[in-house]
Amino acid sequence: MISTKEKDGPFDVIIVSGDAYVDHPSFGTAVIARVLESKGYSVGIIAQPDWRSKTDFMKLGKPGLYFGITAGNMDSMVANYTPLKKPREYDAYTRDGIIGKRPDMATIVYCNRLRECFKDVPLVIGGIEASLRRLAHYDYWKNSVRKSLLFDAKADVLVYGMGEHAVVELAKFYEDHTKKDTPLGIMNTCVKLKTAPEGHIVIPSFGEVEHDKKKFCEAFVLYSKNQKIAQQHTDWFLVQYPMHVMDEKEIDAVYDLPYSRKEGYHEKIPAFMTTRFSVVTHRGCFGNCSFCALALHQGKIIQSRSERSIIEEIQKITKLEGYRGTIDDMGGPSADMYGMDCSTPCGNDCISCEKRKKDRAKLISLLTVAKKVPDVRNVFVSSGIRYDLAMESPEYIRKIVRDHVPGRIKVAPEHVSGKVLSLMKKPTIDCYEKFLSFVSEIDTTTEILPYFMAAHPGCDIREMRELMAFVEKHGEAEQCQLFTPTPMTRSTCMYWTGMVPETGEEIYVPYTYHEKKLQKAMMVPSQNEDRLKELDFDTGM
Image (tube, rainbow, N blue to C red; front, side, top):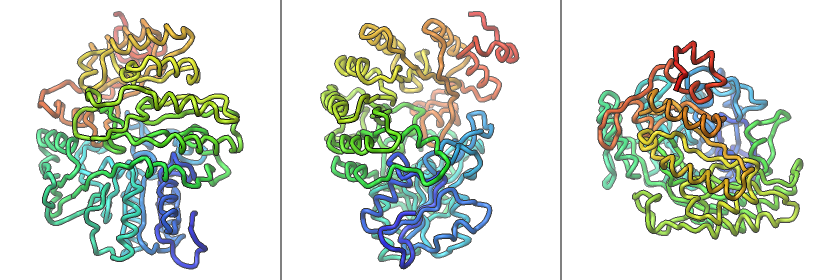
């Protein structure tokens, strides 16, 4: 529980979260609470309430302004189920990793409970579950198209993306308005209106995309290129306002807040154990990978912190209990994009943009200064790097390999087939092999940890044989995941429709569990001989 004052009245905002509470900047609930606190609002937090009754939801009473509801740092369906829809046995955001502490579709469940308890309080939903379900979307677990979560949860406002700006503006709004009033024009929000505002792109309606896969593709193309969106849901329009982009001063202010960097429990939170001595350097990713939701959530524009802010956070970490001299990770969605902030953002592809910054002087300087902080022996870059971009700066790669590798470099070639890589919007495998060669020239002992993906749209057994031959040549893959169709991504659009959204070209999609299991087993054949025989696969190349 956090408050800016002695509790002599109701909290201004109460946050209900599907995660256990950790006061650390890697946890969204803590960030939102600290930002509101810094603006003078009192905040109460209900972490992982028992949704089977009203009791936990009523413990802090009725907030003065609104309830903020989030499923947590992950979509609750991704947190609860594997790509084959089997219940998971572990939840990294729960005490001791215990599963079953958050319900399926947690945002909807929490909103329903709160409506039972408090009928006249505004409900503001946010977090990645709300963000990636803000429009009509394909739901893999129901195998159907669902309405915007704003309608399904019967909430008043949906905050998408990184919500620091929006939650403060909403607090200001509800200081002077009631639940009956709709906040208009607040960036990073979606609301329900009877008509589409002027200047908003009207994309195919829920009724159209629910049954027409070509309309679903059309909607995807429109919302992926535009931010001012309206989509009709029966008698209402879901209206999305543009995304707020933080400047350096704003993002520094968020990370400079007085996080205790501690858990509030006797038990351990696994996700915290992997992030407690790590530092986020920036937000956003312009990699534009088809299967990744980051650009839809954090945005494509890089928002970098200042060197001053990052170094001060490292200095705080060195004073923490349990610190042993190592910053476990200093990075972001793609570690090598730090400093690539754009002064003239547009809707074009950043990878091929001639105006994009290509030198890594700012990042190299940051790494050098960070390693000189007193009581710091190691500063590791454990986040993945975009190897095609990294190759633009040989000096950066040398710096990483020689000084900042915790034994291995994480990269994500994902596949080797040109066809599949094109659908994924990933660089060719030649680029990856050049990267391998260059790293080997610098240090033959440095290991590369590649991530590969099976069962992506467009990938059939022939493509998997290509990948199988590649990993056998370079050493069997240690990290292989099955493609999971998460809401709103380009890959999910291809999975549901069987088409390339921009062209309408029909593609093969591995839908059956049998083939998905087979493709994953092919990645590490020596460990899956029985599985491959069971699946009637001939391992001969």
